[in-house]
Amino acid sequence: MRVTMLRTGLAALVIGASALLAASPQAQDEFTAPLTELGKGEIAAFASDPVLISAIQAQNAVTAGYDQAKIDALDTQWRAEVGAASKPLIDATLGNAASQYLAGVQEASAGKYTEIFAMDAKGLNVAQSTLTSDYWQGDEDKFTMSYGAGAGAVHIGDIEQDESTQVFQSQVSVPITDPATGDVIGAITVGVDVSML
Image (cartoon, rainbow, N blue to C red; front, side, top):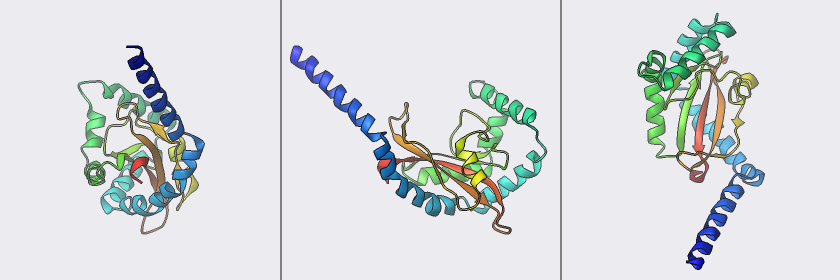
């Protein structure tokens, strides 16, 4: 009995130490180069799909005049809908062609991508592969340090363990540009399972 308890305690200690090591700054540095390469290559490539570009352009035309009060109201509505039976804003976003495209990209990644969502010039969700907890990303680093940094930027988020999946992941965010003008029109964030790099 005592040996079993000792083994269980030792196993928990080893697992805890492994998790701590995996999320350490050293581990973060180890993945910075491959995550940056992924952002500039594969992610930038699928983020330039015409379905996604046209969805962002269309939403920018609608949201260009939104003030912070309107943005906050939409974000509040989204958060309320997450647990509600009626989800008009969520259903409209998840049901659009751009969201279906991103869901296909995530599925084709065979687990490498854990989530994908695209934002307009205000940081509001345009399309997503899975449900996000909020609608407005405009005040978060994933938006301000990708969209806000201009074309060619890549923002790498901290490596964190997803509580539901136990996967260690990082969010990679890049700006999305209009292929005709080169202007930054939005941004995309991709959750990446770092064990699959």
